[in-house]
Length: 459
Image (tube, one colour):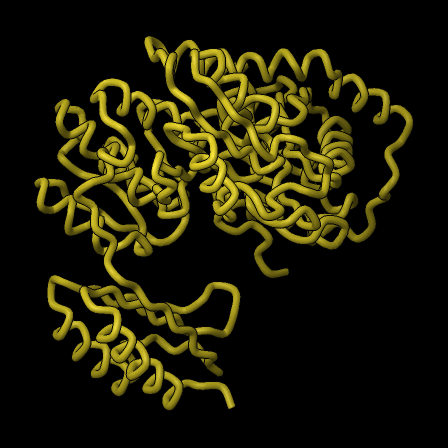
């Protein structure tokens, strides 16, 4: 069996393998048994949450059934952002937290993310063991037996779920936002019809802001639909229409946030990293004057930070890799262009609402508007070309590609960047070039793509 866990857990179309009830029941059972082996004779404890997809409830039921049958004690937090489960796993404490969500994907998809009590995602070794259990399960009933059903019902008590959600909200409002007063600030909050819909507006209102909430009426199918962090046009229009000070958009499970300033201009993850890096640097709180980002972050961020004496350290794409580098280096902040930011001294999980609070604190303490804080970061033009290939040979082993890439890198020098990589899911070579002039990088990308197509292109 091929690997089921990617960098963000298991993800796929709900109802189809591996996101069918039978397989998810095996996941629950396997996870409980693996945790029991580490629990020194006691029953392992799981806390589970989900986003607003219509498939979330039955997938949660299947996971709970498997876990309970294997001897786990389970508690459901109901609909809650992914970082809320990471927080609860750490503070209840639980042996693991499980989130049923497909993040920014459309409602037809769903997924499983598993967190350790530290807030880190499940280790690779345990993922491989769960995959082996799935492969070994020849037939698993899709029905929940009566005895399991009663235990599942107890685990999903709505009143206790609300209590768990309130614990997370209190943590954000009283710990992360301690001393932060938002009176006089008008915010537009796009909840993506997802897991933040009932919590985010309350959080910012609790801190004194005037909140205009949009896309906060989930119906099971409208999550991420033309809204949230992937579709910012509506938020931009609303900020301008309302004359708001800023807007923020979450994705379906609220582990990321993108922003809009008072002019209606996008503030993406790179721009947010720029603001937070400067804020921490000026206060002597940016460890080793270092920021962690991925290979996809814009060259303009790297150059702007360099001019402030701040080093940008790049990782592979994925917040998992950002976190690993943050922990390895001790850096204070890292993130992705997509809006996943991690502040490891506060949380090891990406958290859209936590990120928003940190950004609002920077605005409050500096007395500056968001559009002023982003000044100094100039985004470089970028071009991305995909080439379909018949085989994924290492680029360095193909002389023509290696030679063409070196020539372009020489032309770009320190004022441009070439990133050449393969897609992890499709037979595609990706050519990404950033530089000072759009016409130049388009010519360079086209030339390199032609070389790749000649050497490796599919017929």
